[in-house]
Image (cartoon, rainbow, N blue to C red; front, side, top):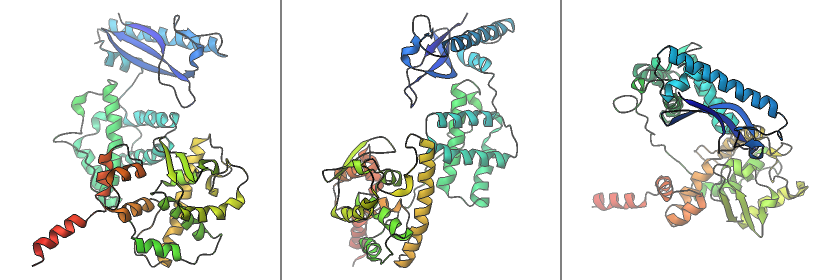
Length: 402
């Protein structure tokens, strides 16, 4: 007979609290079911596997644990009576009442992103799942029905009807694959129905063209006579701030506080991977900062105004404001490109490509890795290969230059 007990999982959420799970073990293999409640570690009694009285809702939580264990036990008895297979995957499927509806599983996937504060990913993935639902034109759709022909039809629809790029279409497929993989791990669907992999739908990232501005084009932007205080003037300042600091991402630019500027350096923690970064403040940055310092009320103020007045603990609001600000900045950067007579698309992210393009092979790849804050030097090599053409150009000239 399988054993059932409550446990406190070791991985805490953003608030430092730990989730209560049921652990069902059979034949030395275990499966886990989240009870969707989090508590402080000090409020858990490891010996009794129950919530301590120190927790204000200990009675209710312990009642919930007892109830869930009883329900799980009853369902396992039903499996015995029905002669059903009792491997851990089958047990989990029975206890969670999990069916293979893609959109129910997708909802759990999105809820998990929100719970872990991954709002950028949530905002990107939710519309893609909704569009897949619109394409299928139904509320429920089993995973077993997601076949290779169906996915190929979806790909063609996104390419021909929605006019999306191959890279964007890949993002749609990745979400479907991620949810499908999770369902296989949880025993909700048999892997034999899996539509991805060799001789099926293979997900490959197409090469993307990264185009940065030239040194002359940056000088044109710097030289523009823009009205001080205007949106175009401000957008140029934010873009140049990013470029002068090796193309730091827009979220990090907008979150920069005066307190992070110390002894002529910018000391900040990256939004993407929480790495600590220390960069020298170039003289050109000091000129930009001087324009904004008059609005500084405390050292904890943001340098730029986009996030002012928003509770920095409200990650959802910060993410939303950053996304909206990025769109607004890009709108004015487009106007700046027109005024500077630059026939290239200029966005906040192009500042990063511009630094890569101008640095070319002037800086060692090891130093570029530090400036880009890449975890792997391979990432830096692949990224910088978009901008270094000197060797290939010389090789070509050597062959045909007769």
